[in-house]
Length: 298
Length: 209
Image (cartoon, rainbow over all chains, first blue to last red; front, side, top):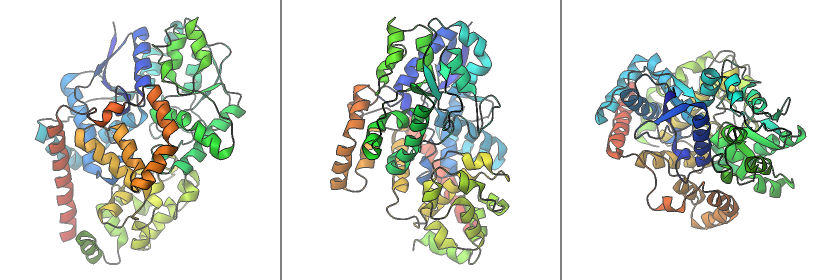
C-alpha cells in the first residue's frame, strides 16, 4: 500500500518555475517507491527566508499556519512533506513557534478566522529526504536501483537549510553524511571530505548581492573540482539554481572554466531507477548532465 | 523622522535594549549574548557586515540606536543558520537579524538603497498579491529596481541566465500576464491584513505602556 503524505510543493515547483524539474523527478521516484503525495489544496507561499522586509513576524507565521490548517482539514493523519528547503524550514519553524507561544497561536488563529480556517498544530512537518531515509530507508532505496551509476563521482552539496537548524536524521550540522550515503546507494561515488558540503551559496542574496554570492558559489564549485567530482548533487532548489545558472558569469569574472552539472538527488535516483531522461527531468539541466543522459538512454 | 520613530525615541530614551526587547522579533534574547564571536566568524558574508552580529548585540546594549538601525549589516544575512547552529548560548541570531531589519525598515531608518531591503520587499509584495510568488515578475522588478536605464543594463547582463532558464522550461514568459496564484486570494489577503492589524495594535500598546 502506498504511503500517503500531505504535500506542500511550493512556488518554485510550479509549471514553468525554477524547480519544476525537481517536482517532475520527485514524482518519478515516488512512483517507484510507492509514495503518494497529496497536494495541499490552494496552498500559499511560505515567504521563505526573505519575506521579512515587508512581512512582520505574525503575518509570516500565519502564512504557514494557513497551509497547515488546510492540510489538517483535508489530509487528516498525514504528515506534511516539502521538497523545498525553504518551504520545509519556514513551515516547521512556524509550527514550532506557534505551538511554543500561546499568545502567537491565538493571534494566528484570529487572523485565520478571516477565511474560516483554524490551525490546531497536530501535524509533523517533514522534508522529502526524511521520508526517504526514515520511512523508506537506504536498503529499500537500493533495491529499486536498476542502473547503478558506476564510475560517476559526485560532490554531495547539502547546503544550509536542508541541514540547519533542524538537521536530517539526527546528523551533525558540520558534516552530515545522508547525501553521500544516498549517492553511494545509487551506485555512484561520493567525493570524500567535500570541503564546501555545508557552505552557503548566498541563497536569495544571489539576486540582491550577486557579486558577493557568486564568490561563495565559486568556492563551492572549485572544491567540487578539487575533489575530482563530475557533478554536484543537491536537495535544495535555491542551491541547485545558484550553483548551476551562474557558472558562466563566474567564469567571466574569475577566468575559471567551470562547466559542472548540478542535479537534484531526485534526478539522480530517477536515472538509477532506470527511468527515462524525461521522467528524470534531465531536460531541466542548463548545464547538461551528459553521463546521466547516457545512462538514461541505455 | 517618521511618527512611529519619534514616538519610540521618546518612549525608550536611552534604553535601546528595552526597545529591541519589546519590538523586535526574538529581541528578548539579545541580553543573553556573551560576546564570543562565533556568529561573526561563521557568517558566509561576515567580511561584508559593517557590524557583525556579535558587535550588533553589544551596540544594542550600549544604546547605539541610529548606528544599529541605520546600518546595512542585518541585510547581509543569507539565512544560512550557521550562527544559530553554533551559538553556545543558543540565541536565534538569524531571526533576530531579520527582526532588526524589519524593525529598521518599519521605522524608516534602513539605508535607502540597500538592495536586499528592496528585493525582500518586492518578494513580499509579489507573494501577498496572489498568494504565490511570480518568479518572472520578481526577477524583472529586481532588475528594474534602480530605475529603467539600470534595468536595461542588468537585463542584458542577465540575458544568458534567463535564456538558460527559458530553454529548460524553468521560466515561463506567460507568467507576465497572469501567472500562478491562490484561488482564495481574498481570504489570504484578509488573513494577512488581520495579522498586520494585530501586530500594529501590539506595537501601539507597547508605545503607550
